[in-house]
Length: 149
Ligand code: RB5
Image (tube, rainbow, N blue to C red):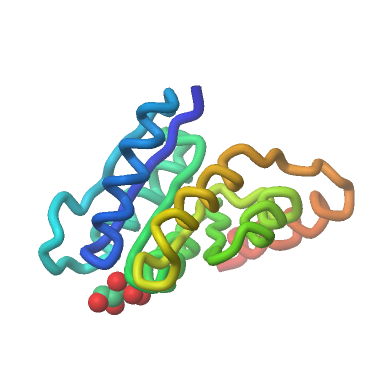
């Protein structure tokens, strides 16, 4: 079963807990990088180790949630090999898997409803990469940037 790494800050804590329960009940192997309460924390402390786990192949995918989804997505995209997509709608969740082969998903706990968050996560986890040549070419060009920094 797919290994999914999760991380959040206080702005995403409730959603992360809900998502974790759903994923575990569906058989996903979940690693939780925190946070573990609704107390105020600094999102890089959770998002960075979560992204590193995906980068190192310890997890297949990562899902990060903060208030806007922006802070955790910026952190994740600083880690080599990470393509983290901030999504607030189902079309983007599907398209980023088909086009970008995104390996991390970011969402905003203060932006979308809990129900939509769960739907986006489901679509994103279940949509395969298209393997289209043009998308592979674009991803290769994007990931070459990692080698030049
Ligand atoms: C925390 O208040 C908030 O800044 C954080 O959850 C996130 O939205 C940052 O991008």
